[in-house]
Image (cartoon, rainbow, N blue to C red; front, side, top):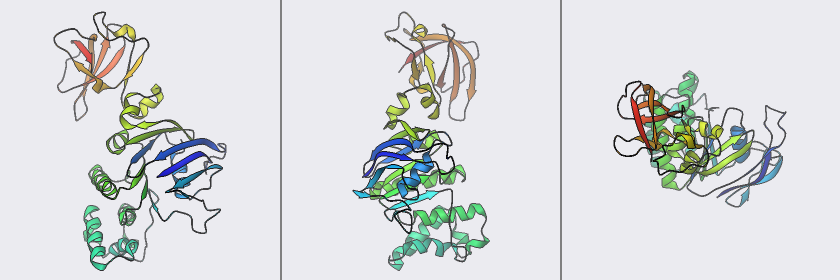
Length: 322
């Protein structure tokens, strides 16, 4: 279990933020927590504190009841029970690709080492380069080798700081699928920092939304997604609309006392019967998965709904809230 109690910390490159916080959170064994927020909100700085690369201003971090200490207390910063996978990749330039990954598997049998290395080489599409020394690789190839080194051993806690953001979408998805399967099998805890709402929603059990070094909302993924505290937080996790009490038909069984944030998939077309909302289509776009339909309500409010087929502009439309 990971616990952060009243944690205050500094931004290394933004000295005008002094001791931002506090941050309080608990991450149970085998759970995946996604931290989302705008650039500069303090996500990477916090994860470095958790790993022991940065000293805290105040508070404490404990992992499996052991206190995590920073560089002021440790000659070699970092925690042996954690793995930090970030965009700042590190490889052994004078070693081959295969040797780089095997280097992280000291103490394991040769049979297991060979199986694990080959599995990662295939996953990262590095088989053809396995005998090439790292100094001859491109930056993108070195990044894949660094990821292979980081994934060679799955520790009790894995910290993922947008590690696959520079890779193509297919490899990105393959790596995330691999990591999630591995951590579930080993009951590893994961903290994932991402700017991609889809990644957070797909892989995380819980989501923390950060701003200016503070966690503004923390909870189960579905709850944070469907019940954001405000529109600013709602926008970080994807498209949304706001419906007002005046948007509802008088015949609607729904009763709203105030405006409400809704996601496009919480609305559906209703061709027969009483609709909650009526309006006209103002625009319709195909996004590769479905059609995004913009609807002007009879109250002159614009809302977004997803649909499986195209709807012509100007068409009258009836909607129900799911």
